[in-house]
Length: 316
Ligand code: BDR
Ligand code: CA
Image (cartoon, rainbow, N blue to C red; front, side, top):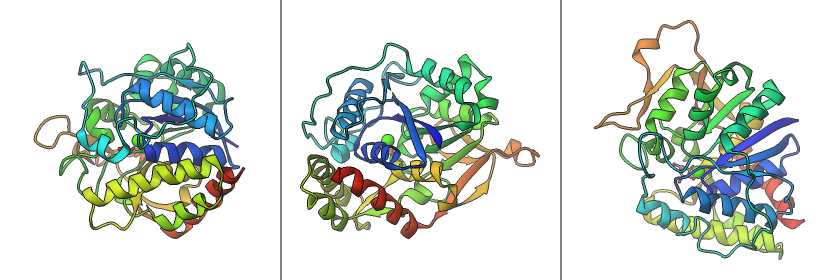
């Protein structure tokens, strides 16, 4: 079984990623680190704790991560995040309240310690800004060679960004951290908008969950229906909402879901293309290429897997 740590800025698709990681029999979710972006880190951590309670997984520890990038005093609050995920990140729904709080240890120390413990069995899946990972690498560069794999949701290589023509939201929050991560030889897969915007969930699927008549089924159907409605206003060409974060979990567990190209990447940190993920022209001929960029996805197989795992979890 793969040991997995999720690093979430818990909005609605992060909530789906959390459920996927819990439900997949090939994955052992050993902890969640909180990030910022869709919401403040504290709100995201509370959302993760509450979702774990809803799903009967109160044994999974939750850790607090960075509140914002190292370069700034606060994170970039984007009105579009509240529009898509709700002010509280979870469609303004009151989730059942967890009877516990986050762990004392910092998320960054947890990641470092877990990497030393599980080494190549550890799979790290960040679905928010890369601040926590960049800080962990800085504090303990040994983890670069120890960690099993990092599969991140973020970036866009072959399509435009979603917060600016150049930048995807997670990379946009902390382009420096993302660039630091891409400059290492960490085993890395980028699951960006190139593939995530092709995996769509519709009301057909949420209807299935609603018909389960369970609390988890109803809450998740409500979350996703909100997300689908909001998605319509910003992405009128799409019929459904993009499964950004769950696809990263799916690819971490089963890399064969996507086609990848190997490329050394960099992130533009300066205007006008701040946040753009693009080939690093200074490393194009390096013999060592460690980043796989997902450029195509078997969306039917992914959606099947996604529903086959989540529906029984919500039915339980
Ligand atoms: C990413 O940004 C966030 O809003 C989503 O949760 C996802 O991680 C998509 O650009
Ligand atoms: Ca996210």
